[in-house]
Image (cartoon, rainbow, N blue to C red; front, side, top):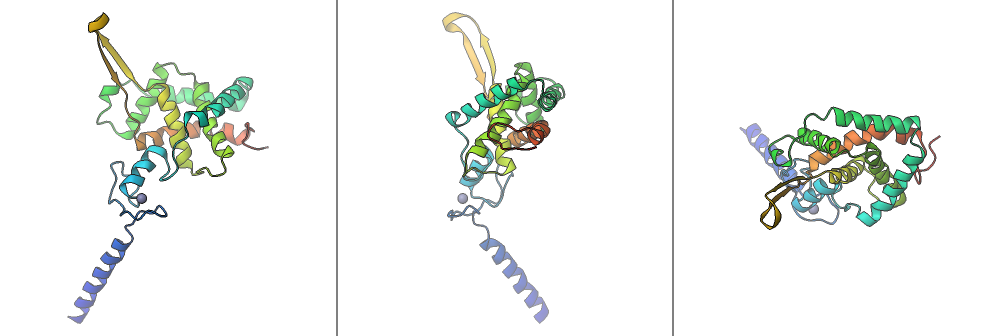
Length: 228
Ligand SMILES: [Zn+2]
């Protein structure tokens, strides 16, 4: 009997203890953690920080703004153009081409609903292929994020932040389905922009990171410091 009672006490305490830890893990945030987020990405954050984390790749660091990232993109594109025949540049470009080639059929934006994050990420690559986005620009987006982070002493350096930031840039390069019916003033238009979701961005970002991995490893990029 006593034994049973003790077991109950232990169980109760274990429940209480776990309850005490369900505070958001962001320092200074006292909101309770969510049991689960829509994206299922992190159960240790409150709703607001979980949403931020899903969208930006960090619970507290916001995404780079266009004025923050664009100079790095320009610099990366210029560097790639100047090194277009470099074997590691070609390697990264070839890998992006492989992502295009293996992305499957193009999916209209309004048919994406219900697809898994993996398939949505594939659809995004197929969209870039269909829009004929130059793979050099896709590689440049990754390099720009690496450069922006290297240039910012306070930057979030976790791989996930890089992946989400780069994925957001390339997602935007071809992110809509546009339809138009009729002519002139009575024409009807439909613009559907699939909002990039947390897991889709992570899948895209990771694929891009892998595509650029050897290039980043072997070559000294502007602002990234010496590698060899
Ligand atoms: Zn929080």
